[in-house]
Image (cartoon, rainbow, N blue to C red; front, side, top):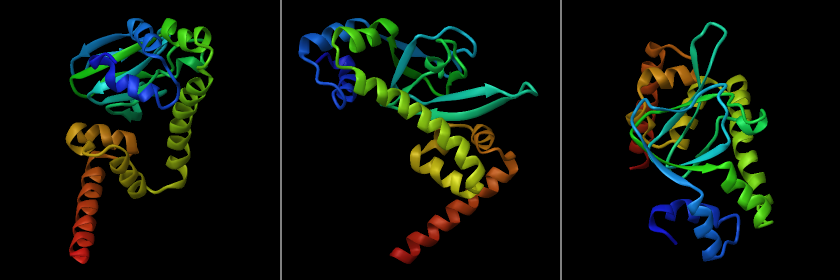
Amino acid sequence: MPKKFFNLNAYLLKYIDFTDEELNKFNNLCSINNYNRKDIVINYNDKNTSIFFILEGIIRSFVMTTEDNEKTINFRIENTTFTGFSFYNNYIAKSSVVCMEDCIIIEIPFVAIDYIFNVLKKGEKFERFVHEVHVKELMNYIIDSHTKDVFERYNDLNNTYPNINQRVPQHILANYLGVSQEYFSRLKKTSLRNSSKVLSAAS
């Protein structure tokens, strides 16, 4: 297994049984790219026929509101995939993706995806997983924003993305939660106080 593709291959092998030869052919269809902080990986409304896998770094997906403001809809971290939701829209990206840190990202183009689906004839499970994970993520964001209070959503954010407060600026996290920076600061302090109480009670 090529070392530079080790994490991606380990991820794929959870869903598909590859031979070493098949993995090598698949890896040869992919590319590893370095991005700087603030680099755009996917632009809204651009053609996108790739899935991306993060080796290092964290990305943010966002859409533009009718007021022409950015609205953050999700984050992705190491050893996870992301798309611009283009696979549900004739390969036209429905969101933009920007790097929040310097990132190392593997691009899995359509030809590599096609190799799994059609040449190997055993990619149905992976295809279903890729679609389900991103649709589920988006649906949870929509549902949670209407059914959970902001404190619950803040805790969910921290549980899903450990150390995100150290990796993403506060105003971006506030934007994701739909609150002001001042309110987010109070929210963060309240969460830290509650965590300290829990730790004190447990000791």
